[in-house]
Image (cartoon, rainbow, N blue to C red; front, side, top):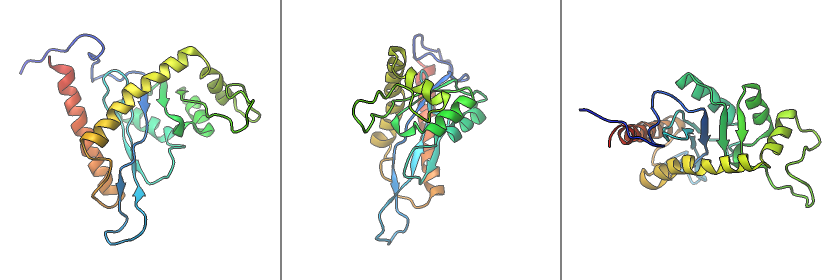
Length: 205
């Protein structure tokens, strides 16, 4: 079957990986025991997507109750899967742990993510704080610029479309299986299906 690649923004070749990657976590749930009365535990898949093709280039499932510290292993996974390390990542506020920003900087990766609002009024969140490392101070200053703010807006168009597809259309908001391995299998099947559909969309008119 002959296929033609569309022109314009969606014509990004799947064989290459853009240098900007965006991800955020969604949180489908699974029961730790079928008859347990204990609270449900969260197993959130992390799915980074290149910003033009909107394909998923890596995923993971974790029972951690926070996204802090998840960027470094995902950068490594994306590089392992694609052979390319992104030079910039767009993340939401759950990922902006200072150690992670330092680790990303050591890898040559720029973090674009919101700076938390200070708990004390009158403190400029974008000014260097006592104890900030150079990469963290640079991140604070960077996020005060119009360019970074505009770039961060791209994250919603990239990551949120994937999350909406997973949760609203493919049923990953709540899991019916137990255990990390099974949840990983379910998420992996979604990733495969999603990327196949994106391949069809990108290579047909």
